[in-house]
Structures are given as C-alpha cells and as structure tokens.
Image 1: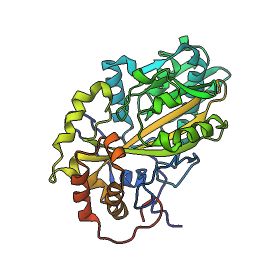
Image 2 (image 1 turned 135 degrees about the vertical axis):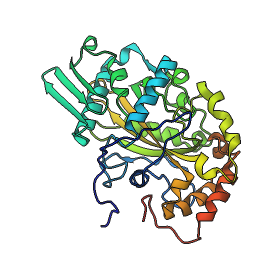
Image 3 (image 1 turned 180 degrees about the vertical axis):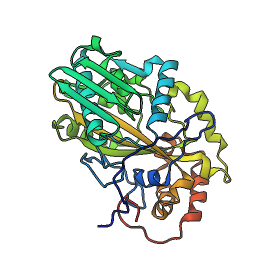
Length: 355
C-alpha cells in the first residue's frame, strides 16, 4: 500500500514559534500530513468513537503511542509560561502519588522507545537516569522517592510531554478526576473540575447525555485493561493558534471570535483536534488520560484536497447545539463560505488520511 510517506516520523529539528503575541505557529508540509484530521466521512455524526490505541500509519500522529513533533520545544515553553502565571493548572490530590509514578514510567518508556535520538531511560533497580536532549535534561533519581526529583513525578514529566495530562482514580463504580496538568485546554478548567466524577466532569456537553453516550463510555472505560490503551479524536476550532484557551483566560481569547472576516479566514481560523488516549495504570489501577492538541490553519487544511472538500460539508451538518457549545456559531458560516471555494464537488474517499 502506498502510504504517501517516504519515512517514519522522526523530528530532528523544532520550530521557533509562539502560541501568543505574534502567533508565529505554523505547520511544515510534512507536519500537515502528520495531522490527525478527525472526519472520516462528509457529514458530522455523534459517536463515542473509541478504538484500540495501537501504532498506526507511519508518518502520521498515530505512528507512536506518545507523539512528539516539530512543535515540542515551543509547546514546552508555552506550558512553562502558563504554569508560572497560574500554578493551579497543575494539581494532584494526595492519594494519587502512586498514579503519578505510574505515569512518569509510562511517559518516559514510550518517549524513549519511539524517539531514542531524543530521549533515553536507563534503569538499575530503583535507580533511574532520564536524558531529555531537546530540553538539556540529564537527571538521576530513585523511582518511588519524590525527594530525589526536583518536582512531584507528574509535574516533572508533564513539563516534558506534549499534551495535557489528566489522572483518574477508579472507585465506587466511577472515574474521578483527581490529578492533572492542563495548560492547553479547549475551554475547561482543571481547577474547577478536579475531584469531580466522570458524569460531573462531562455535564456541560449538550445532546450526548440524553443519547447515553457518557453512560456507555464510562461502562467501557471501567473495564479498560492494562496494556490495551484506547483512543478517540475530538475537535473544535480556535481563532489564532492559541494553545491556552482556558476559562480563566477567556478575556484574552474570547474576543478573537469577533475578528473573523471573509478575508482572514485562511489565516485566523484553526481546526483544533485532540488525540485523546486512555491507559490503565499498573500499580495504582488509575487511568491516564492524555489529551494531545493539534492545530492547523484553514489555508493549511486546504493544501490537502480531500480535507478541503470534506471540512465544509461536515461543518454544514453540525447541529446548532454543538456549534454553540464549541463556540463556532459566530464564524461558522463565514468559514464554510471560504472553504467552499476549495470544494470542487468531487466525491471523497472513506477514512481520514490524505489520498
């Protein structure tokens, strides 16, 4: 099968860019094809959309189970700035320490396995050495002893991993959001949600509770097995490539929605996709929830003809309740009109990958 890729995804260099100020974030041509486009057909359909999280197509965001791409250094710098301004973006309840160590181990193992030129993990009993070459880190510590790390284990490894991290504790037949580092969220707040159960956390989502979506998802996740992670794609849209669109900072990004015009859609409107993966943790029996966000400008999306045809068709079929929940109502039609210039009416092939 021709995958359209000449090599596996192996970032050697990282972009010098920002997610604020002059908004210099952009995707290289290779990274555009790396993007996890979320729509496998021409119409929107609400579904739980969960599948096994196994290594996927070479060159895509699914190739490795924890993805590292050309935005790594810029994202880590943005995360550090968010945490300096608002330390509550990281929280961990006291009973989650074992789950923190589980998470540190998993993220170090997966990054070192997939990108050995960037990360190295050496183990000698409980004496571990972690080398992160892009960030210039070379630390030796005792696994299980937080006093040997400069920060709590979850705090330490999340500052070196792309994507937001939530940790859930399983008890009383439910999942409880009891720890996390959330600095790149699409309009939700760890500080507000920490300590909530699965239904409370997802209560604001329209239509899905009445359809039983979250009841089915919770039942499925409670039976998640060790070594068999799962994933799903979620999406929204963002004006300007701003990673931090938190409720706490709404005054900074909310007004951007009023600035979209027919002339600037290609540059300002971004498709924002979350590759969400869920992992059972071995010692704590907790659950790791990795929410990796990807963004792409409309004028980058249309460089892939299939995606340029499909996206306006999907947006036209999105129920108004969901458009409102995602904050798209003000600029949805303007975006559809701009995208339709790139829809020649040809049929699209099934699936999410470029032809």
